[in-house]
Length: 275
Image (tube, rainbow, N blue to C red; front, top):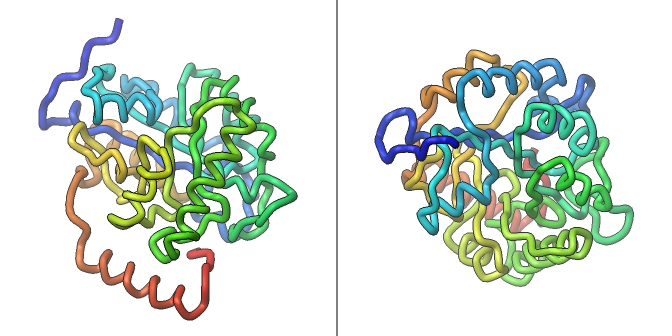
């Protein structure tokens, strides 16, 4: 049995929540910066195993943040956004082969040939019907909206639709409640967080480029995004609780300014993919 993680301010209290996108050798240009190769992915997973960290799902982390449920000593969370084609195949197999649970956030409009579609540029994607397969591999499934819109730029009605329609589509194919959300691009605001709660989500992850902690916000959980330039040494540092600031913390003035700029741009151009 794993020891209960102590409540401290050191490395053990810092929780790496990793954000992956595609795992492939030849990604489309638009997602290449946020893609790792299968070989790099395997090496990173092996570093996580060697670190002694215990992988848990976002759901387990939220149970700690909200209800005080214990976590294993030195947890780590692996998350995957959008639903690229590798996910229900070699990526899920690599995780299952190491007994590593994870959480996948699916953009429903990108995974079906009917409906409103999505703002994501073309790429090899899984199908919505493959979502139950992810659970068979031991992955938790969460929502990532319908179109991958910048939620903090939307009107109230559009925001509610993005949150509730994607949730309903996933629940229909999975046959059970979907409780966790990932904000597209990590973009959120107090209004968006309130809407996520009202839509029935129990948590939401952002990006923030930071380590999470037992004091993190359930509707703005910090994640560390994997880019193609990251090395196993970067992952080793994160597993040691180093190399990034620790959430929670207030938004910086540049973050707030960028949010207002995007809102103004959306008012003129409408919903766009942020790139």
